[in-house]
Image (cartoon, rainbow, N blue to C red; front, side, top):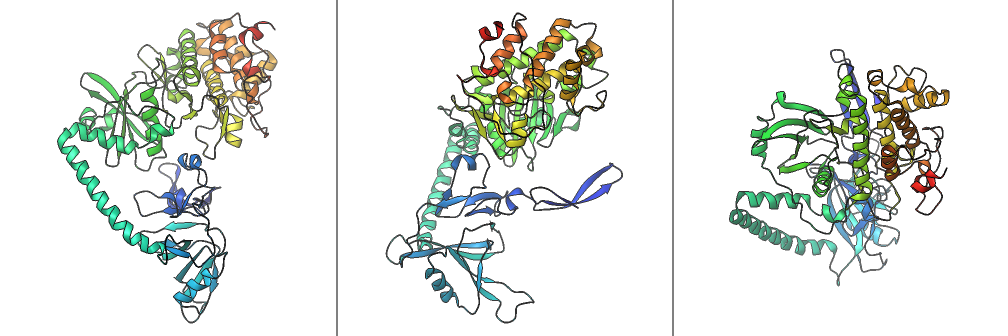
Length: 562
């Protein structure tokens, strides 16, 4: 049995054929069902296809941005405060799991239970629930009242109790439940009207037009959440049938790769080869990440970013269609003993500079300011000429023009490539990507993974190994043996030096990407001495703003003057 830090319980069984543990039972099955996951006055709605956090009627998210980004711990608060008067009423929520921390009162009728709550200004809700246990004799029905925040509430599809939420009456003796009886039929009629109009539009505009409308409805307000003024995606919408034909019905022989998000297939659409990412329904890369990637890549154009050709939403299917890159990902060469020799030093150096230019575009030169958050060798694709293209923007994050850093409870990415302040404290900034690029640079030079154990025995990871060789003056030992004959000693030693500057523990000591690109292209720029990386040093970080003293914000002139 395994219990995770979040309280999830997994019962595992050893599979001798696969030499791995397989899960027999997992509870809760979804994070939304975890204790108090949706915060105070929030509840987990299990009535739909996927559990979702919502606010109780009459309440709204305490922090809208947190809810948009999937952080619900702060919960919800009332739209309108209670007056604690005879004008208060109750809103009925049927089929609810009883919240935690209630006061049980015996020998009360339903009406008496209502009065009990109304007479107590601290009472926020009550329930007349069945609390049957063998330890309790007599009537199974009990009056439960809540005098604090409602915690750990769920909406069940087929079971549960009626929960009565205290609220303000809107007029005379009208209760919130009476209002629902009026509003719901009106909403139903309005919904029927909207559906009729939608069907007419589909018929009038034809199959292609209806597909575009449906996809835009599914994408919702993603553009506005990302501070984009115009809502045009300028992205072809491709039917599921066309994609199925292009991939020979998603044939196993055409699989290019896969992971927790789903599977990538090779296909041919018209006379063009394509790569199709088919997201699985239980994927960690859900609808939000799908929207993120569609909106971002559709708005970005750079030779070192992968090109998105189209997308498809069909029922539960979510598909992304990219240009096909014949050499697949960088890690397929870099960490493969039989293929790494195909990457000589000139090729590797061009890959390093190409990825750096792609990051510079994301951080500074594009219309948006974007943090990738998951830059690694497997997310760098190579075309037929071995030119690099950054891919996988599902976890990317947009920053405001003047925004320096942000805190998040949702740390995404790959350990080893994450900067210390991001992995340990959830602080994300441009320097997070800079750190990831530094790790990638050291991997390209050495041909070793960040988590490699051989030949770096005695060092916890590649960064520590590189630092030890730097201190001993043996940096040539870090160079991949397969490129020794083709490499330029000055270029490769300069790359290692830059890599160590990028993985420094203090984010304020790391350079920004404009300096990195210039330093890779110009050997005349003098490099400062790096400090020893200390990944596990726990401390508070603050990204200094422009104008404050920091190596990362030095001008090229300042560096040249050392």
